[in-house]
Image 1 (spheres, rainbow, N blue to C red):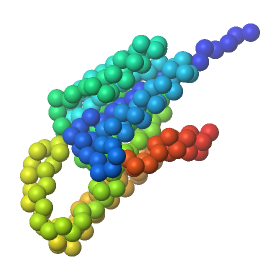
Image 2: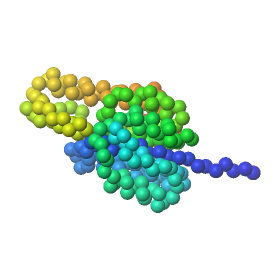
Image 3: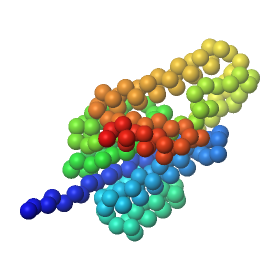
Image 4: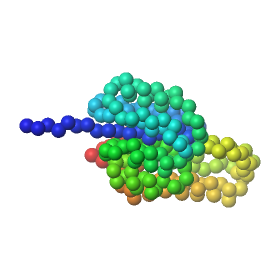
Length: 220
């Protein structure tokens, strides 16, 4: 009797760019992202799977190759909590390219981000999706979806540091913002679906555990 060893590899790709430092509820997006990644890491450990980590902005901030073991997972958790990125910008396409270059065998990959990046990752996602089992996990705050009418407002781009004076009294300005936000969310859904990858979306004030369980149940 031959028994094949079950050995899966999970890769966590975590966005640590400046836009994750936002939150109007109990937690920032980056705190929820960290909790989700930690939950997935402990889950992989219980299954005796290998687990690796890629922290990215518009560059690869940190790469921890996949390994087994409790001490390895604890290192990943520590980096998720304490790591300070050099950049605040985002380039998901570059991170996916790095994934394809380093992971030659099939892996279960979770890309955890707000996906408020440029729409330039379809090609690299398609390449990665042919080899790996991909899931995009979008974390967002409901205050990001629209701008309230609060008069003249000074806004700062969390990734570029650019300051802009915005007249939120203007319906055109508010509508343009909402359309741009909706376009990026729609692109995220459509491009992941087109590449055969799954998607999960959760607000910072929702239970991501419920979302995760529902996702895995639907896939079973």
